Length: 248
Image (cartoon, rainbow, N blue to C red):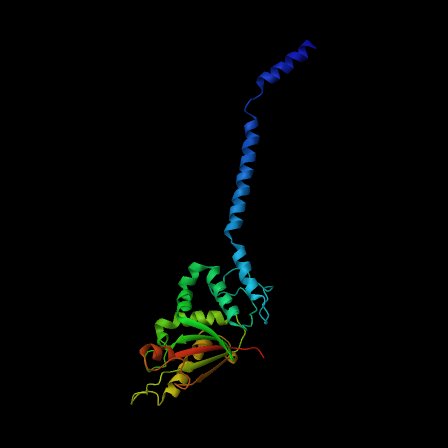
């Protein structure tokens, strides 16, 4: 018995009094890992995306996110969603544009999306949702060839149209100043029609959008939206309208 007591006392004397710190350090590491994980999940800001999807939900057309292709992003132009949605009102289109802008804001800058949002107006009429862009943003005066420095802007329009399924009617408009003699076009009506055709050809031939979704027309100076008595009014009347037709 005396020998056993001696062994027990010797074991206690040899025990490391700092051994508990190993277990404590493991616990601290686990807690640190847990809080880093929480911080990472918070930075994804999924709440903002949920709000956008809820705004899109009341639209009458289908919005199906079940067919997802891995990788890529909408703004980069790679296929993320195999299905598109019908835009039936102004609010739905604005929500889609906000979603495109918000997913990768840095990429949006690189792909001219922020620039596009500054130079378009969105409205609704009996034809459907209408995206309006002044012709001076796309064409030189009296010409129907798209300016090369504006290809990026039209690329963003095309990127948007890949994710909506509406048929689209492109309409050209001019101010009321007559065509100068010797020009390539006989009238404002002809100029506006060729401008609309140039846009459609770029979207379908250049960007590969389905041609059967598009139609083009020109109205010249027949439907001014502002007074032609001022330079500002004339500039606004020189416009291209992208009409996202109402679903039948």
